[in-house]
Image 1: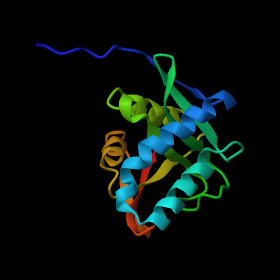
Image 2 (image 1 turned 180 degrees about the vertical axis):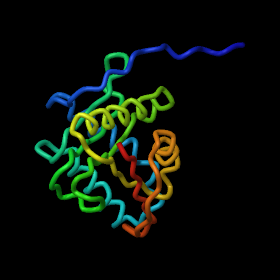
Image 3 (image 1 turned 90 degrees about the vertical axis):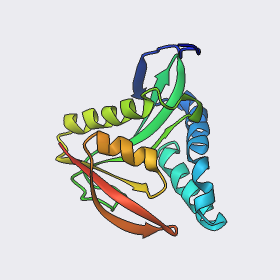
Amino acid sequence: MSGARRPSYAIEVRQAVTQDLPAVHRIVTAAYAEFEPWLTPENWSRMMGNIARVVEPGAPGRLRVAELGGRVAGTVTYLPPGPKDYQRVPAEWAVIRVLGVDPGLRGRGVARALTDDCLALARADHAPAVGLHTAEMMLAARTLYERCGFLHQHDFAHLGLRFSIYVRSM
């Protein structure tokens, strides 16, 4: 068999620190860029504004990063159970928001590690369930969540697209 093998690195997921913010913004911009053609320019701007608010300093939740080979490879925001601005699932559920992986580092388990980290945080917070939403064109995300035991609950329209709510009972 020919071809270069990718180096194998352990993935470390941790709380983001201020120094991680430029990498977080670079990653979410690059990770979501492939979806721009699905939206009107106005809705694309709204979507990226919504994403930026989730990862800005002081935003609600716990901004997490995954490091691979010593560099930030992905990010996610975890919202613990309790009152929150996110109204798409019951307040007592934990929530996963804005999971993104550097496109050049996909296929190495980064998204799975970030999802597993959020599930561990939810267990520690005694959340009865974890909810999230994803859009119709985000096929890799939908596949990942289903493999992690999330079940489709219902759909809703937003930004001219079909979004789906998923839940995983804890």
